[in-house]
Image (tube, rainbow, N blue to C red; front, side, top):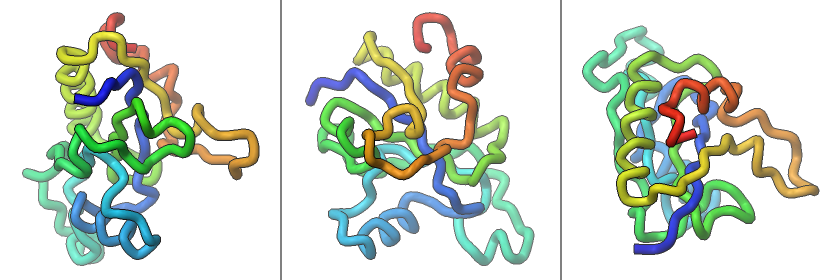
Length: 151
């Protein structure tokens, strides 16, 4: 297992999606598959379910595997080597189920990596990077929701 000391929270900037769809988007960009290790769904896994307003409620909060945890991610320049990338499907509105799943996933990761820090993508930008707001969540607020040993 590679050493991990950081969880980076992202959002998909799309109102629908799943790990397979993101994998395709990342491959189109020339990447070697999905860059995130986990994707947390919002109940709209594809364009059609969103267009027809037919949420798949049983998928809301579902955690899908992306890139294997043993493999370095491709989700935040300069911080991939020791980090885990978690992507919430959505632009800025996320469901309670997504936050519950995120909290459980962070707790699970803390079991094997007890000294993890948690950051939003926007907190880790390199000096010449364009401004980002991803994951469009106030990370201090999010860290405040987590048990004190996880934030």
